[in-house]
Length: 322
Image (tube, rainbow, N blue to C red):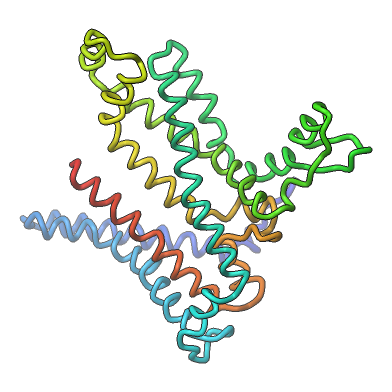
């Protein structure tokens, strides 16, 4: 059993106490300001938001501006390099492969996981075992992406034909008389096999949200469609789908934002080798593995630009529904 050395941990504990004291001081200052006298609504809102705005500035805005500045520097982050890092990004083979793979992830993962979640939600929305069914498909979300990557790496595990197979997929192939394959070696198919692991973790999120949306469709509309002679498929297409379209859009946008930042599964299963890299993983490699600070910062800026339209659209859609 490891012992806790108070003396060795004193600097960290001191930092913790300083953070708690600063937080308490800020809260006390906010409360004191609000209770000293009547404050206008906008001023009160600004006072309450001030601590969060300060933290966002320190933790998000300033690092973002620093990253933008570094994207125009050399590998050491000191000398000015102009647009060299951005030119490299769109001319280097490895960077182009990462861009191509990221595009494939951003298209296939949201569409596939949402489609799987929609089919599952349509099947269980009115079922008596709905809670159990949703719990089963939601379980992969309780696993970290690293854990999911480890699980699927075992699923795709390869051994020579004469050896016993430990990978589930190759065991099935051998059981049906086929030859085992190295599923994570052949490009671009290995990218699709990584995408399967991501879909497995995200389909539950889509299924839960879409199940709630389907159950919110008024039963009177469904019953009226059935009385008019519509088949279940026609009722789903003409009544249910238009009603759940806003939720479908939210699910797609959320999946796209999460997919653009995909890193853990790629790192765990292939390490970005064999042409499976994505922007987030390439950014990590360039900045921390190869010491190319400028290139890593340029990839981070590109990733931010790719995510921004999805986030902006989601914010506008939420404002319209409020």
